[in-house]
Length: 238
Image (cartoon, rainbow, N blue to C red; front, side, top):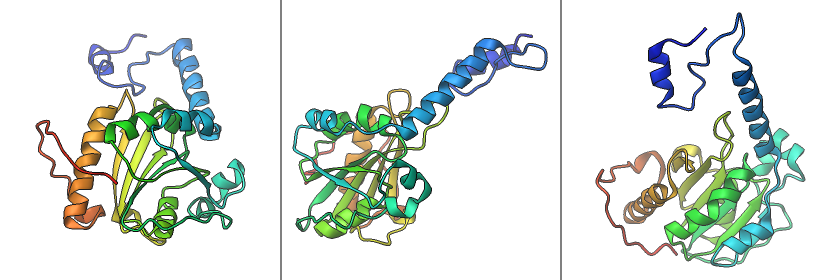
């Protein structure tokens, strides 16, 4: 059975599973196989390991490698709390007043591998850079507190969807310290070619960083009131 015309028209504007058609009580074989392939890609993204050497080679500045308290991927997935804390063996030298940038594998090392270096370059970050493994978003708070940082920008692989195994999220936190909540962060989500393009994400982040520094806050109190027209933002992200 073919899908109604309106559903076919809708399919042009979304990667969601609409207008698949039907064969008896099931979807067509092609749609079923596509679902299985996308599901496998999402699972692979969750379990993939970040190629740290390759990522370091793509970055214009050296990056310090750190890890969370989670020993391995299975423990990371079962114990989110451990992914929010630095491993006790990690010691970081304070860099008061910096903006620390952390690239984390998160729930999709695939996303960090594909897009993080390009986003860092587009933002123009010149402060300390860290690569974190088995990391949750709140690990940035631990890193920022140890550094006595002014703020932390966490780039992390987001939980994969069936059509988005490579979605990168960016989380901005003013005055990071252990115990910060998600309400105290700003998030720019779905950064990838099929979502929010890297140039647009970089422009948004640069604007948020400038406003964060001006108002000295982040999270729900920092409203996204960026002008809709394209503007040039000059800010020293160090």
